[in-house]
Amino acid sequence: MLKHERFEYILKTLSVEQRVDASTVSKALQVSEATIRRDLTELDTMGKIRKVHGGAILANHPVLSFEQRKQVNQEVKQIIAQKALPLLHNGQVMLIDGGTTNLQLVRLLPVTFQATVITNSPAIAQQLSAHAQVEVILTGGTYLKTHDVLVGASTFEMIRTVYADLCLLGVCSMHATQGITISSYEEALVKKAMVHSSVRIIALTHSEKIGQCESFKVCETNDIDTLITELSPDDEKLSVFHQRKIEVI
Amino acid sequence: MLKHERFEYILKTLSVEQRVDASTVSKALQVSEATIRRDLTELDTMGKIRKVHGGAILANHPVLSFEQRKQVNQEVKQIIAQKALPLLHNGQVMLIDGGTTNLQLVRLLPVTFQATVITNSPAIAQQLSAHAQVEVILTGGTYLKTHDVLVGASTFEMIRTVYADLCLLGVCSMHATQGITISSYEEALVKKAMVHSSVRIIALTHSEKIGQCESFKVCETNDIDTLITELSPDDEKLSVFHQRKIEVI
DNA sequence: TCATATTTGATTATATTTGCTCAAATATAT
DNA sequence: ATATATTTGAGCAAATATAATCAAATATGA
Image 1: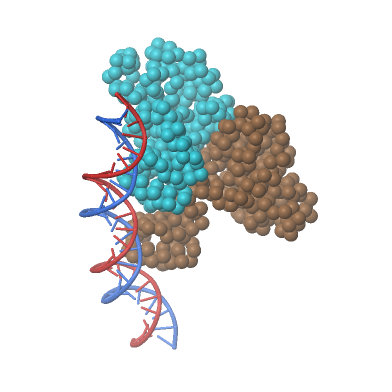
Image 2 (image 1 turned 180 degrees about the vertical axis):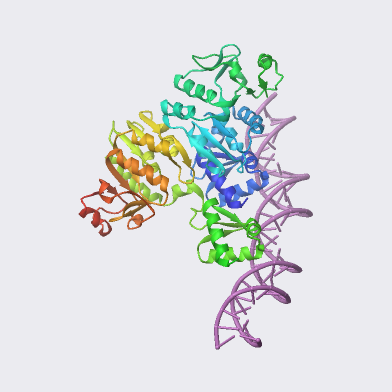
């Protein structure tokens, strides 16, 4: 890996996410944090970025934003993403649902990762621009700005025409008997299509979403093959899914 | 193995992978690394490539990625975007082509602006998430990472099914008699579809692109209704377009 | 053909890059 | 404020890349 490639990755990530942190980049690029920090220092000296404690922000950006942008659940998402990583393999065709957890997951993928990714999230597509070996297909459609996802007939249609090895499904609400639900009808349709078009369904969710229920159904609990939360697999709260023969990680 | 053949190999690899490293090339061509390094040095001196520690990268490679390209010629893009702004009106349906100039234009739109935007650029779509009154439709398809645009049948199909009031066309090369051209075939098809699907075609371009010609044709010069550059409308360089009854701004 | 260039691979010395450790600095929690 | 955790920069040794030199191989040209 050329130094220049690391620079590319850092700047690309920065342009998409407005921030990078040294440890995440180090994992994605599979080099030591020391190296990344040296890179950040160099890029800072060049004036390309602004180095701050923990990582870097865009050069022209006001300083305060870094900690601000660290969303509250960032650590939880990081844990979930880390757990999901070993389930992805080179050569697979995968449907990746929008959402910050999946975005985080994509950020952790090594740049050498090779796959075909179909996603309904422009942010995820952009993040993958650093991965030369990943073919990225974005579903078309209406852009739902608040959630950074594409919805509508066009998205639906495209997802229905593929058959993926696995689907990384972002879950907003999950109830043992009510199944997976979401408050937006259009998003429900898209997620439903994803579940329908994949061999293996991997649901990623913050444990606090478990037990909740919203208006529109995505799928039944048993449609899920693997459930990933930030909790230990043998946590009390997850036992009901064990009983239903769902793999819990 | 002729030196020329090694040069060919290096340049071809570089154009496909955006990078080469000396040791890999040396193994692939079964020659010593010293030889490859000498080759790289020579190609660098010729200006064909850019030698870096460990190998080489493309000479023209915008030293550092999309984010930086946004900075390059920023003032020129700003001027062009400013000139285009008055042509956009509330309530219109517009096709907005990818590219940094159009991205800049979108940034200048007042947040109260109201319209329907169909674009093939995830970055432009994301930029518009700040505009509550703009309905954003992203064409689906394969994500061309280096240019941040979507291409392919899906994009083509979607653009063909709409009929827009205007199209903001990013122009890479424009020649009075050869028309508008571009180096990527897939992008040419998409732009061609955009021209076909709009009532009014507004071409935005840096004046240095005028007079150039590339491999794939987008449209004839006369398909353009309005041409916007950073130059004054009565600049010598633009007179040929005046003669062809194109509105020059 | 023979003398003269040029190119190549091997060797060595030098320079750069990297990962690691650890004390100091900085952030976060109590 | 104090304690605890995380992040940082510096120094160092190992790994890796580079440039310089030279002799052998190959091409060129009278």
